[in-house]
Length: 101
Length: 160
Image (cartoon, rainbow over all chains, first blue to last red; front, side):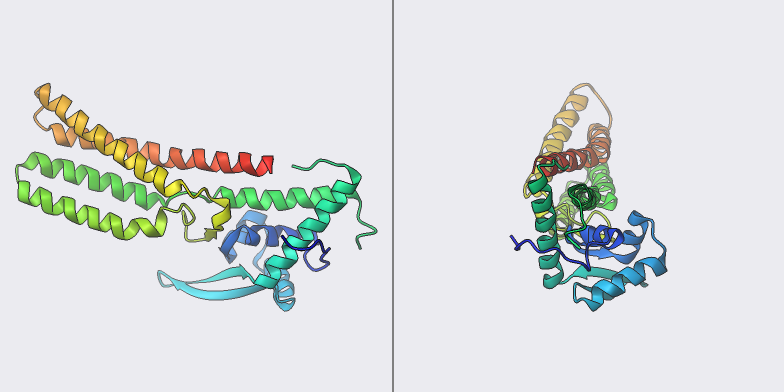
């Protein structure tokens, strides 16, 4: 369990949605993230670039059945940051005595 | 930033995190081609059993078993239903492979029982009839089995 640490890079709603998906997978196809979150290619690319710059994810280009695909994978640093961010959010909610889920 | 964030905002953010996990749990399952291939193989083996060529039937059974043994380790964990995601192991029950294999053992037993019953009833192609019925059970029951696994994973997530 990571120490609670609010993460400014992850917190914006679109990036949080992206990282939440990635954190639940070993890797996720770019198109899957785009379709699930209803984003355009460019909007998603922009968010991924920010997360990649922070060292939170890597983009892998793979060829599948002669089709080129981009897989997105959280780095260990990205996973630690996400877990710390979730722990920080839980602490805030816990302090206020709110229920989630 | 945390100072300006209300507990309600934090709760909304946690709900978004939860939604991400649920979306990935929806991806838990086995590829549709696995169930289709299994059902097709089952019918082919049934037809061969009725065709009266025991050697051919035995060879086909061995080949079918070998093919399944090759493919199964890659898909039976339930984490690669599509080629678009690989679900994290901690979101998927470790019992999925055992569950699927148990299901297939039960279908095998059912196939033999159905073939014996239809043979006793005078059917001309008992193994074929039984295997077609078993294929239908595989095609309908297999995905349903994994749907139960997904529902259970969501319940566990909600309870966490």
